[in-house]
Image (cartoon, rainbow over all chains, first blue to last red):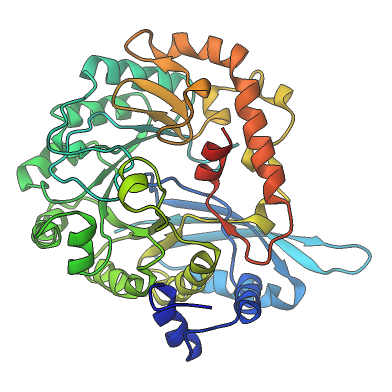
Length: 108
Length: 332
């Protein structure tokens, strides 16, 4: 799928050991990363950066919720003040949690 | 609340199209031969009106904003009206004297960096844009100015992002923002077909995730793409709730970013947005007088475009990442 002119070819090689990942493999990789990482829903426009404050909402599968919260806790540092609220989702069986996250940062 | 979030409501000003470079990806067709720029009186009135409409972040772009003679005055005016400030620059003209003039009222300086030196110079159509910018960074650090870098992602340069991140971190940047190329302005002429497709966007997401972990706690790495699965549960973020909900809101809650182009035209969301949705020209009337007419005659159409774009994004797609603003601009 990836061709030499794509910037992604070398990145795929670095990440997966091959430059021609199938679409199905790429979809699976994105899905895995999406459920284990946080999805920030705020969107800036080019030239509009502002890194002081991150507010985000993330939906995390129940299997990955512990890991996601652990990542957040580990982000806490003198430069990062991290706070988050957890909202369980799914009835009758809990299947995901919503994390409302605030990170105050001291940039430099 | 729009896609810039509930905390930052952005007015983006392009006070000049003058620039020392003629970049291949420039959406405003800026360059050394262009003289178009807004009088400071219009900029100051705009910032006062923007503050009254609850905007809280003024972002200066261009052209090269450091070539705008009254940039320091404009930044001070933004602060005086309650707006935080950012400036996006190619970094080549950041003399220590200029940095000293700006630093009291500039909250964040964003410097463009589009790859390794050869790639950066090619994108900037310049033999030494990278080298000149790099020489300025010592002065930026000495000034105490908070700064970051902005990387334009194309179909062809993702493999350089790791180097860019390492360079940015080594320079002491607090931010690396990755923004996909938008084929607007000069980019539409000379870089057609170079904006990242769904595959490049997806691999970019994977690479950025990796870099976010690597630089956690030292540098924020932010990718300007939306995950359509995330927005599906938050229609209000994409202005896709009922139009009546917005009737009594300040403008900043409806339109963010608000774009002020160098010819004085005010448009929602995206440089070059279809003029049928424009507020009008600041040369004719101040923003506060343009808003009532826009609310009455144009806001429903603008919200309808947002809603249609949002509904399109709800369709199933295997690779989920999209760039919201050009999608809305295309449908407008």
